[in-house]
Image 1 (cartoon, one colour):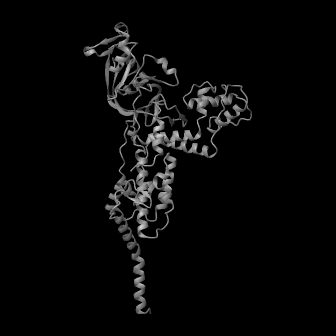
Image 2 (cartoon, rainbow, N blue to C red):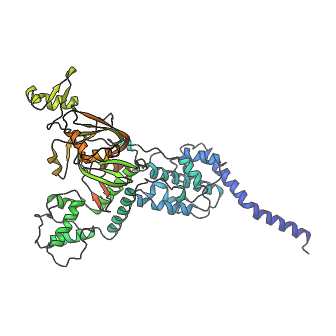
Image 3 (spheres, rainbow, N blue to C red):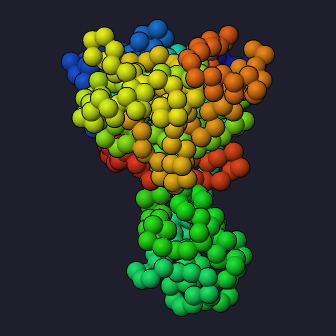
Length: 505
């Protein structure tokens, strides 16, 4: 039989063991409450770490009576934050190093409270950047597509009962284009770890049959990026190398002549670090978009000079496009095509009429079918001289920008096509018109008759179709080919600088 006094001690010890976690949790909650109630609020800093989203986390903690969210799980969060680099983000923006050194048990309730708050701030900021981008797109001139802010408080509440990965589920763009570009970023990071690629020395153009050290450097460069897939054992530009040069030129929007001239050499000599940054920039642009582009939509890539019709994220009709000149940039925005106009009139914008048309005189305007309307406005009749061509696709917007045919189809032969006043000219406008109207019983013969009739005809779509006018200088196409393009509007540097900056409060 156990002595009575020993039984009392044993019961007390058991009670202490059972109740200690609750007492510890209560003390942690009190310590968290004290931090939010301190004079430092709302500019709260914990051991040198500034809390960027303390307002958001405070609401969640108050709803939980300040119970901690991350006890025993900081290491799991750190592992999740480490993946930020694979999205083109910087893990150190999210208190990564600070948390990594404090993932073990805390010495005091006050220390545990501080770690919990920093962990919540890291989770919230990472969720925000995944869910709508790190860079506020309105800071980048010309981008007018908005993705709504995610419900951060709901996400943090979920993180209290779920793994961080599960709580972050659904934050990223729900599009295979983002996933393909992310995989390309990780491939290019692997190339960088292996030493990158060599630069080609200056010199004359390299052609089939050429030999020398420059050819060896060319082979090494093409092999590093995967354009040359067979091992070369000579210093000669043979058929395999010419084919690899053409592959590289195709991926970079260059003339596909198999010759390493000035433009191709310049593209080859862009460093691996610069290409990685370009991939990071364009991953960020994906995060600025709505998660759902629509079941069927038209997408224009300004920098790629390309337009396409997509069905279930599958390209069903692709074509070359002409976009705005660098000083008349095509804006970046989303809208909905609502109707088509066949044999359209062109109502000249006042700036074009004043600067480019009126100085040529009335006789010149009459020969090209340009009428002077009441109030002095200018309008060009349908016909072969009308720059809108045979059909335009309308989505009324305050930019006065739309898709249309052209009277100068020879310009599609150019590899770089920033020739318009801001609207987008299409290489295959009648084919697109048929795709949009076939569900309303139209045939190609009817589309062609309407396009050639010479008098304007408006046809409403029974169901509008989303149109997204975007700007990507790097993407992975449907054939899993990584594409790069020149930054024709010089927009990349501003995004790169913003991505490198420390997050703002």
